[in-house]
Length: 268
Ligand code: ARG
Image (tube, rainbow, N blue to C red):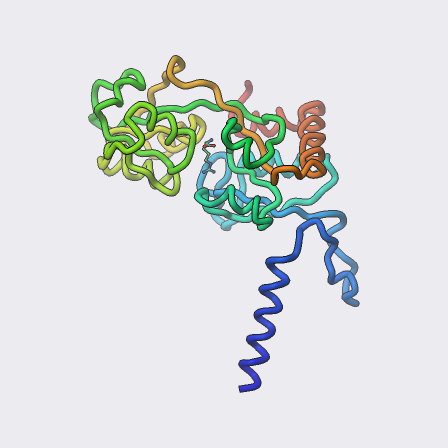
């Protein structure tokens, strides 16, 4: 019918507008006669895997909140731009930058040489390290080496996945990979694996908030190197990267960064 045809056309117009529109373009709706534009300046779309408390997660009202969210929001304030956070699965997240679906990634992303080849990173804004979570009743795990003959859960494609691959071998059937860190830790709770390896902040937070499962944590400063989180932008997007870096510099200088840090992690 005419109606469905029209609806179909409308849908495709919306779809085309949705894909093609670059966040940095001023809203084409400026001509709308109603209220004056609410968003002043550029609004960038930020991808984040909001299953990573305390860095990015959804609160009881399903709002995306967390340390990374507050840091990048403050960075945007100082850098003179706007951000809109969009929940984005970790797997495939990097591709959204290249495709132009996201302008910035804010997702506790460790800056690595390999990743630097396909995206650009801001100055580091947080230091992290891998940490081992050990299941209830599992004995003999004092160091990372002790996981050699154990079943280990990780989040797919993370730096945790990488270190465990190095120890157990890339194709080891003792590595169980999950699309999110909470799923990996749930597997540990259920006894499907002996341990999980992931970013310390997230592992500590989870173990602390789920005491009924009797998990413990094991630190291994010899085996795990410090990692640094950065915000990522599309390779070559120097204009945006400069704004982000200027914002980071500003919030470190004026105490805003420390304030947010202390709110989440206590004093340094
Ligand atoms: N820092 C680790 C990495 O870059 C894990 C990050 C996972 N982040 C997330 N929001 N799921 O590989």
